[in-house]
Image 1 (tube, rainbow, N blue to C red):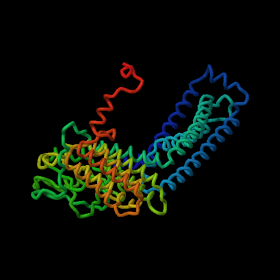
Image 2: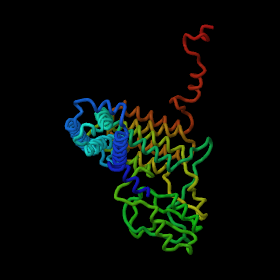
Image 3: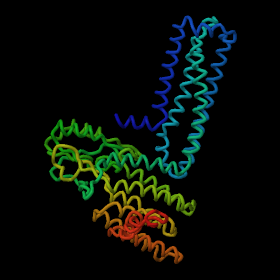
Image 4: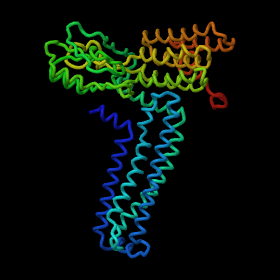
Length: 456
């Protein structure tokens, strides 16, 4: 069910259709009120000469035609936005399709057209039969539609800016990280050990029947099957991994409880398609930002500022991931009734975010400094030894990769200094302010100039 809902929410069908249906219901309600209104405001308005049936029809036709033109304009603008977004990375289009402002604007304008048509249907030649309240409602909706169109144009002008697109991708990835790594690490707590991909030797195997990327897994459905059948289900491929038909997908223990019905129901929990989705796959969002960064630092584009922006957005995501884990799917739970899911680890996300940008930005000192700045922030956020070792290793690779490049002496000095800051942060000799702890503490204790303490 979730896979169909995700497809509908990421397109221009479900939300506009719901809005159009609400406008149709509004039109029928307004017509019903007109039929019940035999006195008062409706009767007074019917006495106005210019509200003839022919004039009302022309007004409604003009409003409906204008809204149809506005809908065509919105489609044209969305096509232009998608074309421009595809220049950064074709994978960001799915993120743009989920924009609620575009979906709501499309639905409202089409809904106004439907409202006008429904009101026109009931207009008779008798001047006393003009649905005055419904016509006034159409006029108010028409004005609201024009205002919404202006707001949509302003929204698109902001959305089309690359920084806003990157922020949109980062926010969706943060939601995916919170979804897959819901528990924040407490002070002094280490992240739990995640299960290995290899199936247990005594388990029975459920194979995939189709090929494609695993876009999402209905974990609640798998938990229901595991409890009802009293089995342990180990998902062998991570969300975002490529499942090949005939390859192991789920391991079931004990093996004798695996039935054809259980295998079919377990396969129903997996949504497999040709493209990855950010919903349960934070690595997909990281890959989107990396793709934009790689295109920005390519010789054809040569836009290091955009690459640095992508690196900082990646740092935002890595800082969030380094302090979270998911103990529900720890390796020690394997073999007990329930579900073991392969969740993304920080080390995998770190490699995905840093490695390619480091390799393709050898001649750009600004991108190298941005990478080292992210690694320094990560070293300040964790005390877990395996994480610190990986952060140090990446910092040394950034430094050593550029040691033989034709950088100016000042550039090499800045990179060396940034690498030393990473080392100091990993050893706990650097505070978040970028100063050694003793110097930072002295700065906190020193009174500012001109204060009453200094005068005393």
